[in-house]
Image (cartoon, one colour):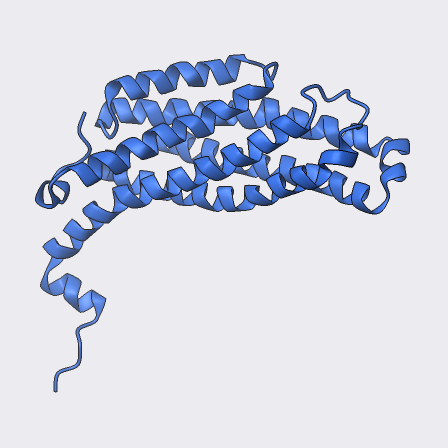
Length: 240
């Protein structure tokens, strides 16, 4: 009785099948990862927005009633980061040989820096809240709250959002060249990216722009892929 063929043997026997499967599943994977990232990060940011004062110079009065809510929001960030890494990977695979080296370097670098600083701000905020959970009086009296709050605000609203804007610019530029998303969507992304870069962290709700933009792209990719015949989805890229 013959043994079943391994995936490598199947790829050798029928390379067209594996390439078709790859073209079919990669856009859906990108869409699902992007939607998951957007939902998790939006939930986290909204919970923080409704619980924490916008200005970092507050006295910390919100801690007594909202620190558990903010802790929950921070616990969502690592899972959003995992989904964003997957989103970056499948987008690069979607670009394939059309990926320009210059823009690809900035695209990958800005995405990883965004993720690193998002994690850093969440870690500082989480550490500050952990101190409050054990020694509330020590946190306020020692000045650790003011320090942690200011550091978190600066990292998240200034540096993290700037990297998000750069990621959007490179993604939209590559999209204009390759047509993986509609032209109007890429132009909208460029305008929103400039808004993030020039906002200088003065608008706290501006942080919602990036996950909303990722959600828009992800929903489009998923709907466009599901709406096409299977034979067309395996032989063509994303429509303009």
